[in-house]
Amino acid sequence: MASKTIVYLAIAYGVFVAATPLTNYQRFTSTNNQLAHNVPERQSSGSCEERNGRFPVPNQCDAYIECIDGVPEQKLCPEGLLFNPEARFNYPCGYPIDIDCGARSSRQPPQPTDDCPHQYGYFKVGDHQNCGQFMNCADGRGYVFDCPEGLAFNPESYRCDWPDQVPDCDAEAFLGFRCPEVRDQGIFGGPQFHRSTHDCQHYYVCVNGRPRLHNCGEGNAFNELYNTCDAAENVTGCEPPESSLLNEPLRRPHLF
Image 1 (cartoon, rainbow, N blue to C red):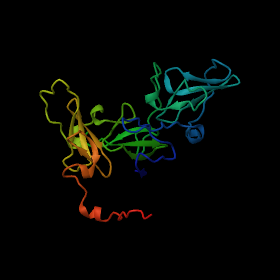
Image 2: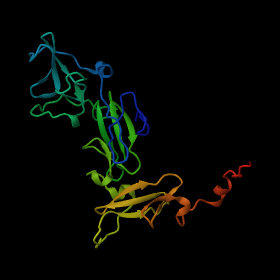
Image 3: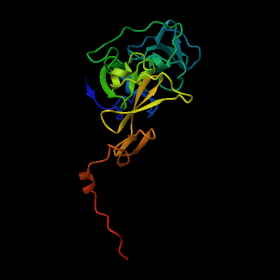
Image 4: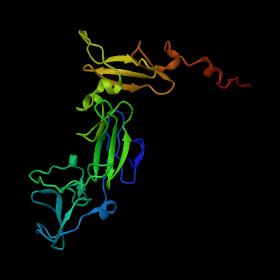
């Protein structure tokens, strides 16, 4: 891969949209300056519905007609992107998830590279047991990102989501935890909480029998008595080692 980094960093071509239950990210919006050098050869064809504007090409979803002072010019979006008729004043090409092609089903042939199946787009990395990464392809170069801990990439929504909400992700294999079967949840029902067997900081919430991983954060632990995060020293078996307490600065009383 051309580069690998975590999802919190931006790349030259933008940042992935990841609206998750934990964190929200800004959607990448292409600009003319970023993609101008990738626009294929232009053709003078079609007609103008208005004197100025951009209009769809019948039967083709990644082509459009740009009219300037009544002069039509047919253009192609960079391969992997589609024409958005609603983008009147912005860059007119966007990701397939955002655009309804209707009857305009034709597209230019794919232009795959060693990294990417298309020149532009977001694609899943890994299999059903390794669901936490995705690739952003820009100009045929692939950039691999990690979803936030415990989340999986959903290729149907371009989001990092709970793994039980991603159809092609095995949540149990991905998280390494299977929710115990609960035959009678009582009159209250609701989710079930389970502390991780690997450390005190993590815990699982079972929703409809499927696991979701949570993190209490450094210095905290999951308190099973209250089903919530608590200071580690308040949770039996999770107290910080005495050596760490000895390293804390000595607090002396103020002298008046």
